[in-house]
Image (tube, rainbow, N blue to C red; front, side, top):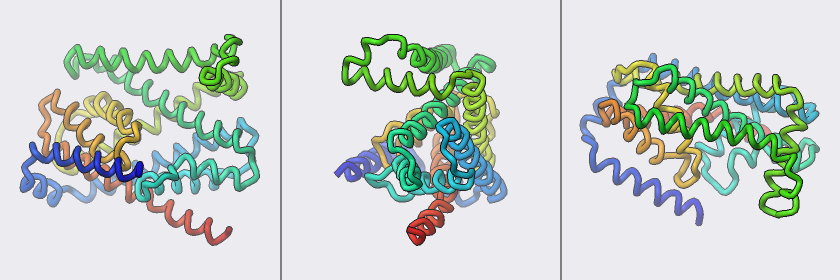
Length: 301
């Protein structure tokens, strides 16, 4: 039922978007896109996924998990495959947790390892967006730039505050607040040395930088010539919005957010839509190695 609702939302979003799009122009843009740039973008996206798996590997080492890097790479690609190609009640993060549990690790430890990886990845995205907006302040109008700075700073400060919630003992007495209290304990246990945390956040910044470069490469493939600094500021908020699980694999949400943000600098909305569609297809293609790893793991079991 949940996926049917997501499908309906995706259809409604695209129906609304297509009211303002010239289909003939969209087809021409897609047909004439440059394959060389798309191939480069695909390689960048694959590199981003591999580096994300490496970050999860480094975080899992702090939990004393003994698996090799290859295990995390395969599991990460399997998770991406489930997220992009097989939208189901079993999400990519659940697949990664199951993979760890099947190796004999504690379910709670497996969950926290995946969850912390997600949180550190999100913080890296916020840091990248904050730095880009400050360094290139004035690229977008003042109001939009200040809004991004406010949101990213709020998220980063919230993450820093989370580490200190362990000291507030009464939080553990309440069922809902106890979740944050336990998470704070886990984070402090994982990162007694904050230098390690900074290294993991830096890896996350690089991961998202590769994704932004992917989008920039796709813009060049359709002759949408905009400065890279625009992408550094505009693309991270799109990634943030697609985290909200209300459509299938972010389709519709991503396209609407891309068009809305890039319209602020006067970009051609049909080209922006074409870029977003190609990116969505690229995510599917880049996740396909996960299908091989998934089939391989099923044969083993």
